Amino acid sequence: MRWENLTESGEHSRTDAALFGADAVTTRTFDTPEFRGITFHEVRARSIINRVPGASRMPFEWTVNPYRGCTHACVYCFARKTHSYLDLDTGIDFDSQIVVKVNAPELLRHQLGSRRWQGEHIAMGTNVDCYQRAEGRYRLMPGIIAALRDHANPFSILTKGTLILRDLDLLTQAAEVTDVGISVSVGFTDAELWRTVEPGTPAPERRLEVVRTLAEHGIGCGVLMAPVIPFLSDHPAQLRDTVRSIAASGATSVTPLVLHLRPGAREWFMAWLGHHHPHLVGRYERLYADGSYAPKWYQRRITRQVHDLAQEYGIGPTRAGMPRRIREPEPDRPDLTEPTQLSLI
Image (cartoon, rainbow, N blue to C red; front, side, top):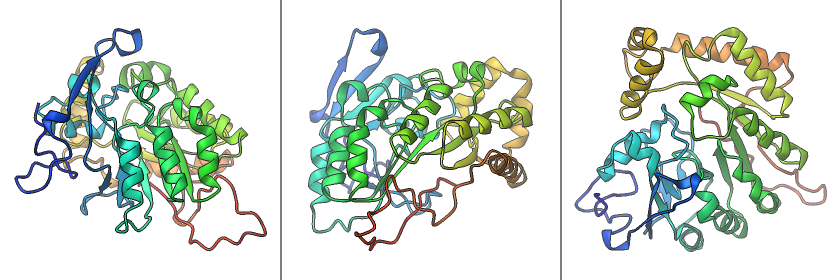
């Protein structure tokens, strides 16, 4: 496996310092049902706050990713390409060869305390899920959230995992001193589709229970309705069922995102499609003929349908400038900061 020249951007370079060296890697397997067939590569990272490349469509500049690879095994995951930088394949290896940055909490605390760090917003869960199954064993997120809380550093978390509920107290504490945004990803509620396309994730209804539980504890949570999968989860009745379920969970917002197929993910997804839905292969080749993204007309149609349904069921789309606060400031404690908004489209 290639470790030495892996830089923060995910590219190989002879000049940039590697994120970790081969001598810092410990490989483990655990003979338990939830981890059977999975290999963990424990590394001591040299940097944990990563700058998002300037060409990225993401509206945030900084991320923290304590894991590489993901046992959620979502066949469409755009992050699959990053495993090729380690000479691992973007299919089975991405699902079963998990890199764990075991020193992430203490390294983050150190970097947050640096004079060079200006306290910018940090997004988590934007590459692979920080609350995937491995987090139950390695418990990196409590230390990460505590460091962000102690430095009053704004952050957001996007997850498909239910394990985030373990850290409710820490999230509430952090929200009292900084802006905290929580989003759960639920692209559809079709159980049969979920079992094949997202086999390692909690069921959609369990994720919506996370939204409901957060709301019951005073924590506002939006839903990223992603991905909407063409010809498999985009029928008007399916969209209605999904938005209705999201509204019933108490979500503060719903933001649709149509499936995109970047290199690495595209090959894996198309192989899955050919096995499970061979009659759709030609339609996908035509729909994604121009690149990784579905045509604008298709994206606009889905967005319009979801926003209309959201309005009907009493929830609104995510809007620029809308703060995602867990708690509003006390009346006698003026808010001196400008509210910020995280959106993934």
